[in-house]
Amino acid sequence: MRRISNLLLGVVIGSGLTVLAIQPPSALVAAARAAASTDTYSQLNLFGDVFERIKAGYVEKPDDAKLVEGAINGMISSLDPHSRYMNEKAWRDMQETTSGEFGGLGIEVTMEDGLVKVVAPMEDTPAAKAGILSGDLIAGIDDTAVQGLTLEQAVAKMKGPINTKTRLKILRKGAEQPIDVSIMREVIRVRTVRYRTDGGDVGYIKINTFNEQTTEGLKKAIRDISSQIPPEKLAGYVVDLRNNPGGLLDQAVSVTSAFMARGEVVSTRGRTPEETQRFTARAGDLIKGKPLVVLINGGSASASEIVAGALHDHKRATLIGTRSFGKGSVQTIIPLGPGKGAMALTTARYFTPSGRSIQAMGIAPDIEVLQDVPDEFKTRADTKGEASIRGHLSAEGAEQTGSQVYVPPLEKDDKALGAAFNLLRGVTVNADAPSPKRAIPN
Image (cartoon, helix red, strand yellow):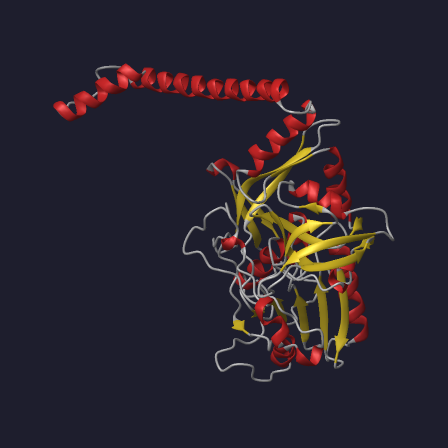
């Protein structure tokens, strides 16, 4: 094949003549495929050589299974920050997480530069109570440095029996020294949906994550709010997706469906056009066309962005807050068989109904509202989002950084929530602010 390549180069440069006469196209393709196949086998042979040399010459006898698992981890994690291999234990742990009940600290994490990065602490969990913040980097767990561990290994070290403590060494932007935090492990029962009424005329619903319990929790919230506020007094709903790290795609679709009578929610597009999938609303508008405001910020990621993007594109909701995280890739979970665990492989990108990609761009609110951040939090009130993570999939356009993630602990200080309530009650929030969206029958 090398001789053919040289000959082709000579013909093109020397005479400008077509090269098709040298070999038929099919033969060229076959030769290229054969060369690629040969190169792949050569690389696999290289892997085998390295494996055998480690087994024979390493200072201590290595564990073959750990060597192979480490190689698999390296191969998959080199693709992008969200693709990963899960051994059997990690696979079981993930299943517990998506079911809505698991043991641990209560933080959503990813890997960045060899350290564990906090995407967001879950509400009312040991991590949140201990002051862990979105954007924190975990450099040490107990007496073990995180550098060199896989994400699954680090997560496993943070988990453990309830009522036992773990120590985390936190690197925080703006802090001169690492911060040592001691956290008591608890059984994490994620209350995915919290809700209440405000002022006798507005329903407030906070969705913390998207797991198998989320849609039922949302339906219960809507039922209870509807029973507490008569329809003629109900000004509308606020759905709070701030610092919601995402979760299951089917739950994002069903949650969106609760506020839309019909229409596309999201599409996923893989490597080829044949892999495109479209997901549509199917449950009907459970709030019967009442105005809707959705709160987002730099910690709103993945499934949260699907919901916000769909409701915005269909003009069903007004978005208030700051730009979302920008995690617009789809991970397919592929079980590898009994005892072999599973892999989470990035297989597609998310697109909103209007065809906008979320990846490394996020969702911009209709009304940007910045919080007043106390001095002690000013160095860590923002996140750079997906676009700042090493190895992320590139955006299909100009990449956008993340934004503010700080949410005041006291409602009276929460400017975004106050703006949402005011908008639903007809109080001017901004001269350019759109009216809260009401469903239009079609």
